[in-house]
Length: 306
Image (tube, rainbow, N blue to C red):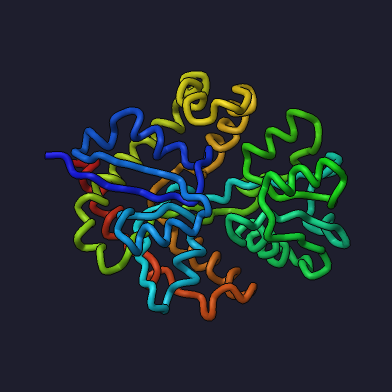
């Protein structure tokens, strides 16, 4: 018997590739699971889909369950898709002497935010952690990535925070230089996670274990697969982006820890929530044990061993 699981995601990005690969390679089907996924526009549709039952689970930033923790919208996080923040900072000129967050002091940074506040929040958080006063940097926020890219290329701002694919696009066409990758300097962080309505967790748990088992296998395979072998799948999902760009961006993520594990690191979760609290995005920082259950990943690991 095949079970079904529906996913509503906040985006359709390269950093989500393990999920697409698991479906493509039949890793979910091997576990008796049929997965149906869609990306929502606007991204807040994931919350509507969870509420209506159209989606069983949502995929997006941990900051969303963090902000809703302790409210009437009860959400349970059970696994992650990204173990790091797959972002990059692009500036107009390279930094041959190395990058330091102090280079942004007195500068204007474009921080796309139509998909949420995470790009700004993690950047400001890493600046503070390095001893740099983020308040001395002007952040322009709340507009979409395509709009900010267009404005940056027409002269607005000194730097822009981007996903790896868009950063690679700008690098390839010579309109900006990747000066730092967040995966290289930012440590661990549950950037993209899976969550469901708390009142549905027990009903879904068996299916979630099957899902996490397939996803974990996909991550291990992707890390070890030459990008040339992934090109048909990349072309299928992003046909309008040059393959050279997709391949370079995919290689960057493969070489990081972004796809290392479906298990959320407790310290990394607590750090992310602390950064959000410093930004006033949460009333109080929820502890890892209150925000995340490890039951699904624990069971998935036992399934894989068995």
